[in-house]
Image: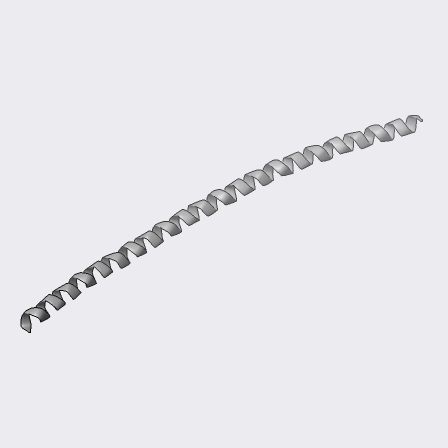
Amino acid sequence: MGKRLVKKEEIEKQLEEIVALIEQVDAKMEKVIADVIEERYAQNKEQLGQLEGRIAGVEQRLDGRRGEAELRLSSKLYLA
């Protein structure tokens, strides 16, 4: 019977160690996940800024072409 109690105590101790390790892994995984989310957010924010810059450039070119088209149209009307 004494041998059984020793085994039970050893098993309980091992289970406590396992639970502690699982908690450590869980905490580390939470940190890794949070870091990945932050990194991805920063990347997406940077990409969004780049896209906004490209869109602004396209809008400026379109606005410039509209002005040229209006000038060409008005000059053709005066020539006719």
